[in-house]
Image 1: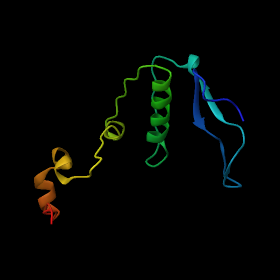
Image 2 (image 1 turned 60 degrees about the vertical axis):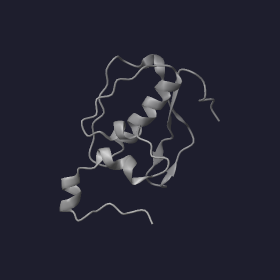
Image 3 (image 1 turned 30 degrees about the horizontal axis):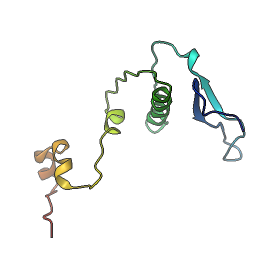
Length: 111
C-alpha cells in the first residue's frame, strides 16, 4: 500500500469500478504542489461535490495550506457546527420560528 500519510500528498480515496461495484487497488492521490490558487467544484445534486471539497479542505489543513471556501448553499460551513449534547436550545439560532410554526413543529419540553 502506498504511503499517503505524508505531507504534500492529498488522499482522495480510491477509484471505483462501476462494473464490479468495488473500489480498485491504486489510491487516488493528489500532489499538493499541483494546486492552483483558485478552483471550482461543480456538478449535479448528489454527485459528491461536498464530499470532495471536504476531503480537499481536510487534506489542505493537514499540510497547513489555508483555504477560503465560498459555498452559496452553506453545506461546508454547516460542517463546522457541533452539538455534542444535541440540546434543543443549541439549535435555536439556526431555526426560523415562523417556518417551524408553519410546519407544525414545536419545541418539546424536557421531561
